[in-house]
Image (cartoon, rainbow, N blue to C red; front, side, top):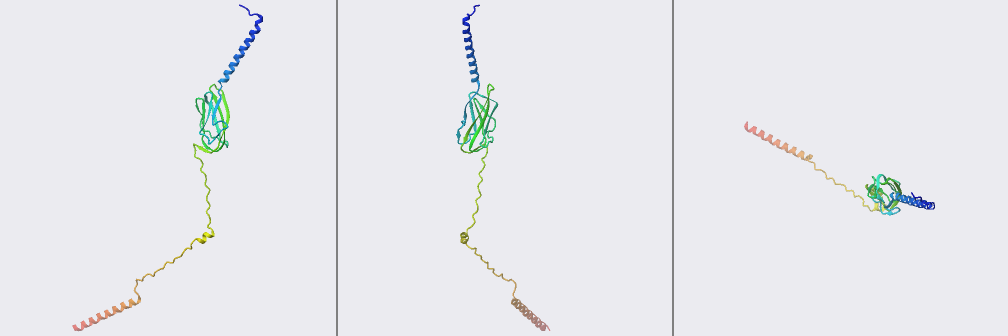
Length: 208
């Protein structure tokens, strides 16, 4: 077995050190490239939209795992408006949004798990210029009651006075006989009765 000359031994050691450095750099780059990273969001971080969309979408370099993946969407007042579980499709993760959504700045706090198990997390925000409602009915605006106007003095003077009409009560006809009619009938009856008596007496005289 041939021996390496003493003069070449330092050069061999230096070459081995360079090769080892390249290997370590290659391994480090490979490990870093294996980790997932966020590419874009919809709505974009810091953007302004007309109204809050029905869902927020995060797009990554690689697919994420459902285990450990969470997205919280907070309204301007701090209330939670994200609804249900995130939806994972290929390299995107979407979070449905629901509720009464006022205008203002919304905060999104997210955390996903890469396919290699490496966790990622972050925060973004966007602003809605107009209010809307998704999945619920928007509260109806309460109309202010209209105060009834009191009639003015001029209006009261212009109102015609009520005309009171008195009904003329006609006297009812008295069906009963008057006193004069009763006396006349009585006299007639007496005359007839007297005539009958006279006729009877004359008849008796003739028979005798």
